[in-house]
Length: 395
Figure (cartoon, rainbow, N blue to C red):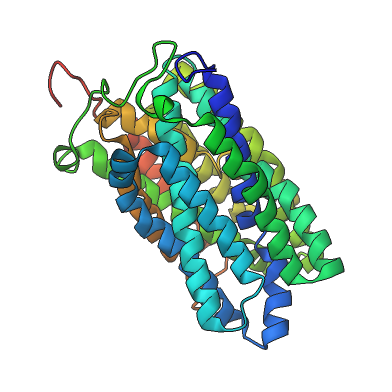
């Protein structure tokens, strides 16, 4: 079937599979943590610093992805990125030094950026005009769903065959399923030509990068990315210590934390249709407001009902910003430079992750956690009022 006649939903299915099988192993990285440090005798802090190279690499690589997509096309970039991820996991299965682990996590970060979020957003934007939010929600729901499914598989393999075979198990589906799917369905005409009235790269309207960075909207989105990433990673790192600090048993605290993952896929899926109905900016603001209210509910963390409110309100929106960001950027800055602008915004997300993951003895009492909710709340109030791109006004 030619690219011009291929159903956009086939492209969405391929991208969902890609997200599931690449982000699944990334979200399952905790399964490998203790086996690796026990094998090599490393401290948790030391290995954490090595693993942190991957998100840093991913964030920095995002700046260059837009140019690479323009020069080589989505198909080549995604296949190369997926191959890098597969080779990275295979390399980790044989690595015997900290230097080797660091180099391979550097490769993984760049490969993830090249093969998932940014090019997937570009493709969905090109192939879909109607139901774009729904398509993005379906594709990006592969991230939390993959984390759930692959974590169980990786845990089984690591327990029975060791962490080295676990890394191999991560690599094989990417090499044997993802790369062939991308090669078969993301052919060259699909990069340049879309169907069903979708927005193509050539026809897309919007601001150039140099124009976009001078707008209020660009910096509102950037601030939102930093605030939300700070809250998201901060909750992941500090929630269990907070709950144990107010009296929950460690096993109960871990179970409550795990329960949040159930809501992540649901929230990511629902975010898309909501964006189609209410617009990306309004949905993004509702996402930030829900996150803020969820975190604020932890003021009563000693009560199970308050923790349940956090799990629902924050869990539902934990994975939604990457799915909403392309829509928000398109509404406010246009889609002409979507890949480059999305890549630049990834730097702000990386900065937020660094702020939220501060391990230097944070204050884990409930009241200081309001600071993590106040930022998203303030951005939500202003975010709805962001400028919307209008070709006639040339903004």
